[in-house]
Length: 239
Ligand code: C5J
Image (cartoon, rainbow, N blue to C red; front, top):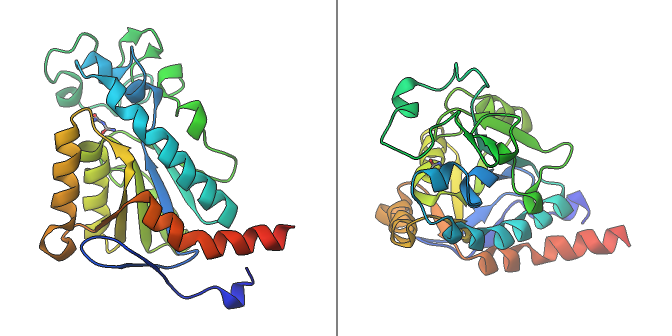
């Protein structure tokens, strides 16, 4: 699509009311789609979770990723991860509870949540491509102790479309951080998942309650329908 004919905003049917997506100023933020959360033998499983609940979010997230890549709009991937010496892992985080394995312990996919280990990688279907931003975050929120805010400012981004896991932990924490920093945030419902389906549902309700106190939520189909003219124009201009 000729940039001069790109609309200033694209209406997306969402809750609690229409989200007006601003082309090129909206980044896709994919939270922690790492093997350590999604596959058996990782950090999520070490906490006693049924990791099979998270697989459902991979396909819808890939649909979003393909769309953002086709449109050449900004893409951010995050990884909850720690330095090999665990210097960025607060003892209060590492020693919480009584998991089978703790952060930094060796499991079947390497040391849990440690950068460079196989389990810390993003699942192959969603692997970052050159030019996409990858944020390693020691906390649950992606703004805490990371360059994410500076990267988004550099790109002139003011809206964030969210996918990833888990809905009520790192996705929600990051949405709340972003909301407090003045970003408009849209969560794509099928592209997020929790080990506890009831927590996912409750989180979506919390986000959209009180007139969108944290942001908006929309089904994947709403967003893809809204983006269709942009995607068709891209395909036509590439042909
Ligand atoms: C958790 C995350 N659940 N990515 N991390 O510990 O949500």
